Amino acid sequence: MQRDANQKITKRTDNQEFYYDSLAGKLLGSKAREALIVKEIKKTKKNQIFLEVGCAQGYYLSKALKRTKKVFGIDVIASFINIAKKTGAKVSVASATKLPFKNNSMDIVLCTETLEHIKQWEKAVSEIKRVLKPHGRAIITVPLEKSFFWKLFSIIYNPEKTRGHVSLVTATDIEKEFAPMKIKKKQFIQTSSITLNKILPRSEKISMYAFFIFQK
Image (cartoon, rainbow, N blue to C red; front, side):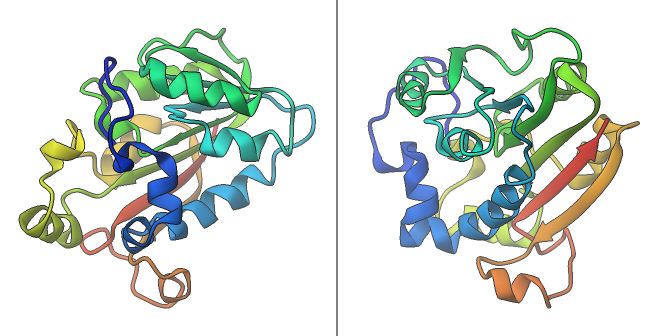
């Protein structure tokens, strides 16, 4: 999804629901990715503080609110934030590279399909690490643009530049930038099928997304 501060919702693919509810979105592996994210969100405790960096219209904020009332979200796109407000979460227009939160203030930070939209994505990672409390968790996903799947997809349908991907981040890049945080979970999402993903070889070279849980 294009991350342009002046963007307005003008087409179907601007809506998060497209990626989770439409057939096209499901074929792009969004439901398989969602299953992993929601499983982690469900571990949120009642009094924990949850932040989503790049929350868009608040799809995951609404799920986090079922676990805790202390839910925050930021995005650079004002029209997205106007919709996210309807979830009841505390949201604001802000940059991932300059989070408007104090050091060690968040128990959980979710950042899914966002880092690839940021030129200075390493700075965004540094900010996530800064706001996390000791022992806090970061839930991170990125598309593996250098994999066979996305290279083929870009040729036949939609080049990464038209998807707003300005940083072609690898799983190794993510691990390096989040160090010295501990990797609690690392998983590649190979296909749109949750069942197939459990039995197929897990290789970055062929996978659609990388999913991480880091602990500070």
